[in-house]
Image 1: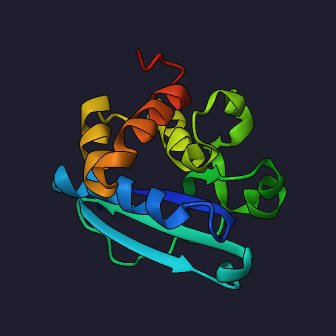
Image 2: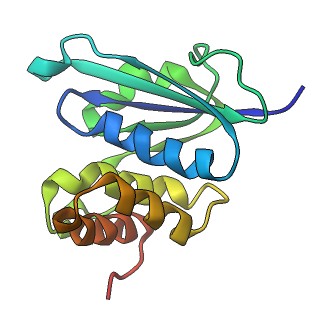
Length: 159
C-alpha cells in the first residue's frame, strides 16, 4: 500500500482555510499525486469553526483524515490548537501563527499563506512549485503580498 500524506487545516470561517487547501492541492496535483479534499464548514460564514482535510499520495481512497492520523496540522489561530490537536498523529507537525512574527506581515489577511510558508519547510516541494500555485490562486494585484507572506512564513526575506 502506498503512503498517503494527511494535512488538516483548522481555524475560523473567513481566515482562508479553503484557500490554503486549494494552494496545497494545486502543488501536489501538479506533481501527479492523487488528491482528495473534504471540508467541514459548520458556522463558517459567521466566524465559526472550520476544518479542511487534504490527502495525497499514489492512490487516495477517502478524502477524510481519520482522527489522530494527520501528518500535518495547520491552525490559523493559536487559540485553535487545543481544539484540534487530537487530529495530529504522534510525531506529526503542528504549524501555528506563533511560529513566526506575524507583525511583519504586510497584510494580515495573508496569514494563511504565511502559514503555508511555515508548512513548506517540512515538505519536499520547491519554493517555485509553491509560488506557481500561489500565482494561480490569486488575482495579479494580490500575488506580491502573498508571495512575501509565504517567504516570511519560511523565515526568508522577500527582497
